[in-house]
Amino acid sequence: MTERRRRYPIGAELIAPNETHFRVWAPKLRTLEVVIGTEVHPLAREEAGYFSCAVKCGADARYKFRVNGGDAFPDPASRYQPDGPHGASCVVDPFAFRWTDESWPGIQLPGQIIYEFHVGTFTPEGTWRAAMKKLPLLKESGITLLEMMPIADFPGRFGWGYDGVDLFAPTRLYGAPDDLRAFVNEAHALGLGVILDVVYNHFGPDGNYLGQYSDDYLNRDNANEWGDAINFDGKNSGPVREFFITNGRYWIEEFHLDGFRFDATQSIHDRSEEYVVGAIGRAAREAAGSRNIVLIAENEPQETKLVRPRSEGGDDLDALWNDDWHHSAIVALTGRNEAYLSDYRGKPQEFISAAKYGYLYQGQPYSWQEAPRGFPAFGIPPQAFVAFLENHDQVSNFAMGDRVRSLTSPGEYRAMTALLLLGPWTPLLFQGEEFGATAPFCYFADVGDAKLKEAIRKGRFEFLAQFPSAASAESQSLLPIPHDERTFQNSKLDWSEAARNSEAVKLHRDLIQLRREDSRFRRQIARGVDGAVLGSECFVLRFLSDENDDRLLVVNLGCRSELSPASEPLLAPPLGTEWELIWTSDSPEYGGSGRVDIVPDEGWLLPAQAAVVFCPRVRKKPRKKPKKR
Image (cartoon, rainbow, N blue to C red; front, side, top):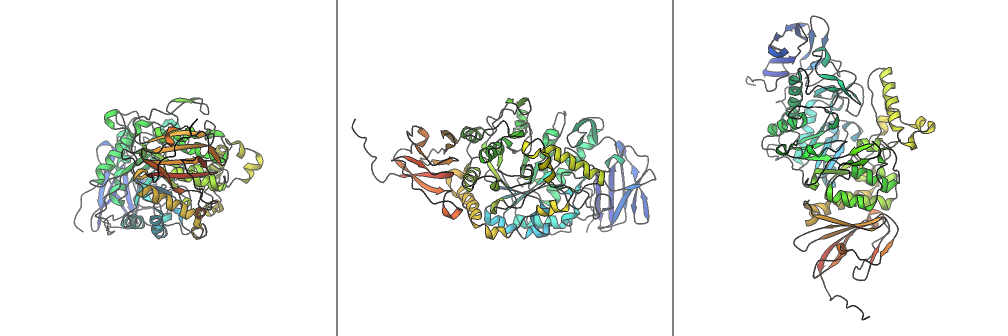
């Protein structure tokens, strides 16, 4: 190994075969020393509160920083915590792993099928190495982009990852840093992208030692629902912003990740001229070089500026999670319009509007929050809205972590899955959804002492009590306890279901294949879809084309119905053609009752709780002549 220069402004970096350079921002300290075994080395003070030094030690060396000659703490920018956030930090050689993805071009958002997963419950082993063995199955399913739930190290034996405290350290629970590199490398070899869910809105309540180095990481005057907000725009915020921007660069450069999903951006408060999320995203794109990366935001208020260009006052991200779509779908499938679902009816017009405009709420009154919801989304391309029936939050927000397919009829579920996977938005599946997993996904967190565990349990149960169906004393007594290991173990996928649930597997694979191979479903064209309400539970989406090659997707969530009169012009075939049925969710292959031949020239007879797809074909025989009156 030749001598290297530092690549990042903070953390421990190898600069020679047996020499490591340490640098940390610690403006509140008088002295700072690095402790390696029995050796103690002083760090020199630099300007602006930084300390640094070079020490004779190599990869795998364990160290802590001694502050003001007293106690020693982990590195705030540690690359690995083998014994968890309370233990010593570990020097990592990021160049030891041999990548084979030099030709990987990265990913672009159009055409992606996203798959959200939690490493700890994705396989029985809960490791990156075990997850790597499942990648061929995801490839066969048609998945193209993996979205990994947070992996920054956190204390305890299990957790969702949203209470991370060591943002540069892949959690030791899932393996070593090179195991993560191997996972990404193998995904790229199979043609799969990998983006990481990052939490830049708060630090976890246990194992966060940043306060030992500076009081300026947090903004205690601007709390969010998880604790103190991060100081991105106040006193001494420059090094704090640098910390997070560096973190974005680090994941892209050292782990070859293909982008990020930014968690709860509404709680990332920043009044700076350049919003920090946009700054992180732009730094990440620069770090990726010629590789394309994708940047997605979760944003509960639906602030569309996040995906508008900076020249228009935006933040240059690619996509936003669309909770509106999910909420309408759940109400349509279950009838439960309670709590934050109360402003949705699950009616046909909502799905038509979502296909045409993305968000449903773009500034209208929203009774649940007693305030307007959303911002204008006109002009934003359809792929910028990520739609889903399930994700980690929404599954766990059912009292027992139930999967959606268990809460509705099989026919309605198949029809809604067809809408999800064929619509103009970017679809997202949650782990196991592609094979009809029945394992619940509950909130689990093994964090802190008994007092903190009880506080988390109480807070979780109070959150679920907003749903009347989970608010009774009886219901609350049955809720899974977050720190109980059984809650975690019960949330693990049972991969044997993939063999048993062949109908669900085929449904998802066929729909993804249709989306990928069909000329109209594949192309997410702005203003390329129109729609019409056909009945109280029935609607049509027409995918428009300039080449006389339209598609019809008719969704009927209600009873078998005959459209008479069929006075909707979107049902008319292109000139010189007639409609041909090419796919139905009611096929016995998917567990349906059987294909119903629909002859649009003679009348529209729609099967119950089904979705059907039509394409035009050249008319084989003349149209029927009208009867004389």
